[in-house]
Length: 447
Image 1: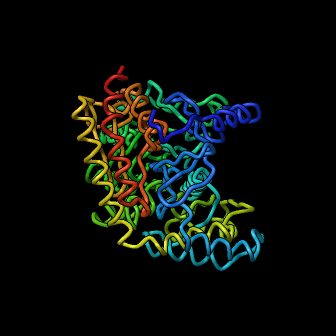
Image 2: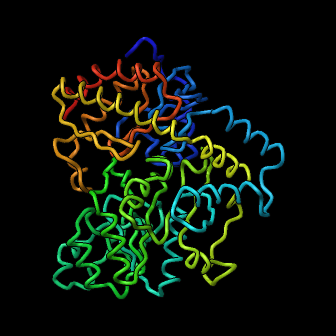
Image 3: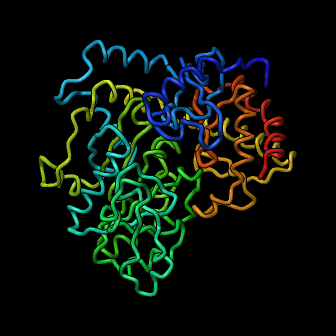
């Protein structure tokens, strides 16, 4: 262990206390370190590109709160705007100016015409699907294995064996519950297909097209690691939905305003000339606060209450503090910010590839826009099956070696590495300096 990292007495003590009162000791599963082993670091504070834990250790942050901290932690202008908002009150239960301004900012950056705010990405996807079902009068939802859209019952689904025989006319080739507590009835109307499998999509719509309300996909999957859509794939999905009267939902909770200024849509849809019917947003648009949104064509969004009959509501939706944080973040997310993220990302990707290659560790680095991830496998990753070929033991060894040297990676091999505008030369050099020893550890720890 590097001498700069002190023992984790305080983190261990807090984790023991947390386990006694919280399932697994955490409030979101990946934080528990189950995938890599060891004790999660309890963070006391963060500034710029750095985290400081309760034992006083400092780490370069390559999680960035799983994406939202595009500008870095405790950005002074965001902090000042939030402080002003808090001074005026934290929640009113009435409309406020910041929510209007944030909605205008999102509409200006994306193809959506109207948006509705919620408090989490799960709420956004759940609401978008309800709207799609209400608008089409249909019930089946199509999704892809490996794409995560929150913990909505209907979307926590695993592919059943029937998917393989769908083309043979199996009308019951729908999904199985992907979690205890999710009844079969909740996933019985969800069809799970392999990502990038155009033939499976075509067969699904040929068989069930008159019952499919929508197809939902991550605009660029980031929850099995970053798997960029092949050129034209999202356009194919949009076209197929349109041909069958279904709605195309592009989930940009992760990629929105993170992959680029206009999200993943700015990298493919804008170039190819198509738009989703509905989109979901989260993470960056909340500036580190719990905020998310869904939006789309004005005629579809008009079917939401109070204009239409599709009901959706939320006490804290459009919270003035959260929308102020998101609005300030987006206004500061200039082209220069994205250029910096691209430049720093290229440095870290190149150094990581060099270190892993020198240590003889099979790996693939994939990216879309400013998002990237490192797969510990010897093949390109096109879908969830490919992602599952990773050597997770090698990643766990790599993760802990980096952590011991002051770099906090995501504690899972299936996540993206996130950077911010605050990742400066010192932060980047700390990452680069840690890589050779971590690559060697990965080589020794390989399964």
